[in-house]
Length: 242
Image 1: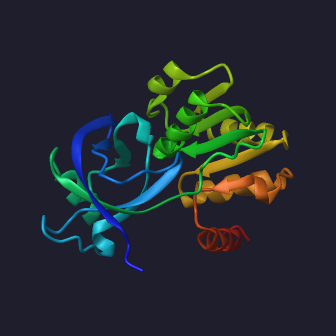
Image 2: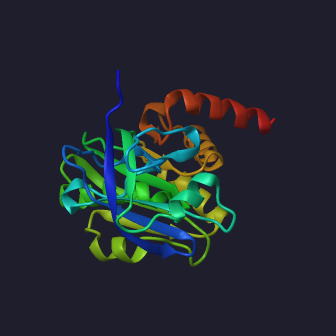
């Protein structure tokens, strides 16, 4: 089956923090997505070809909702970036990206439970559309808590989200790792909760392990990874801890 690809023009490029860049794209005709979505974004070889390779594409979280009128994502570009990040950093407003394979593993359940979103660093961008969706329509969700851990002074989207949160929305920004883990343990005491997790592999492994250790039902834990990837990750990190 042929994969549907969309060409999307970059409308704006802005810095969200040191080395953290947001790309705001135009929404191609016929494209829509759900809150908590992810996608593949490729830097095209040319304006004529939609061919992509592993070196020219990355899996990214969408940080906007269709109702906002744009499709956006954030990424960190270091001083010594990968070939993909280097190509991405050379793009200008008006250039295009190729988007495909949209899906979602963070779409909030509206079954009357609480929702807790646990994120690391810029992965809070994956939580942003879920938070916005809840603020606009809290139906079927008792409350929403977002807990993000980042380096001191490195929180992105904090001012925006704090400025629009609702009474049933709790936003926690933590820099101390031990305090973060204690908060996760405290939050896991309420079993009437879905836990959504986004971040690096080690972060996801440690967070999932804590939740399971504290008796959270695995069906209530929703990491931002494919199940087969999670199975491999949990096995590999478990063996490293032996």
